[in-house]
Length: 169
Figure 1 (cartoon, rainbow, N blue to C red):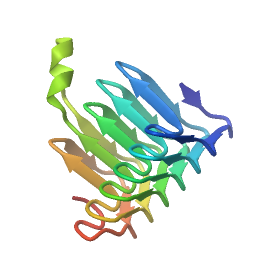
Figure 2 (figure 1 turned 180 degrees about the vertical axis):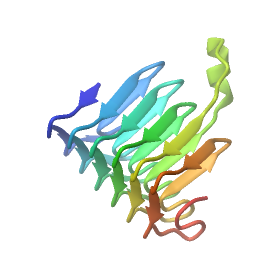
Figure 3 (figure 1 turned 60 degrees about the horizontal axis):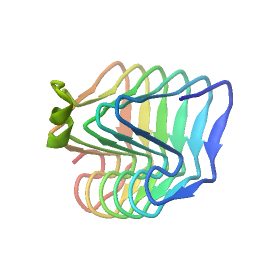
């Protein structure tokens, strides 16, 4: 799935993965002022939900913003999947009723059943922002469980709010 050239996935409602749902080696790119916005999940993954070795990149001014989930991953929920925010990509103003207002990323053992060596990561680089997200419990900006996280090149994790780990938990 490519969301680009000022296109949007917006205003959707689902149990999980309200904007975009990708399972089993899928790819999602949000780029060139494209947006995943204003989607609501009754459970997890307001903006998007990625499962089992799927991957997402939000880059070149792409944004995931103003999404909500009643449980985890207001902007992005990634289970045994990779997430990259690069080249001024933005994860902003998302809400989770539990963990991971902006991004909720976790490693899950069932991905190993696919015969792959699972390496789960979240990379935030090149002036990208995870900004102004809210989680009721942990990880306002980013919640990571058994996940490699890296930030570099003037990227920002700021103005996020949660009971535990406003920026990162």
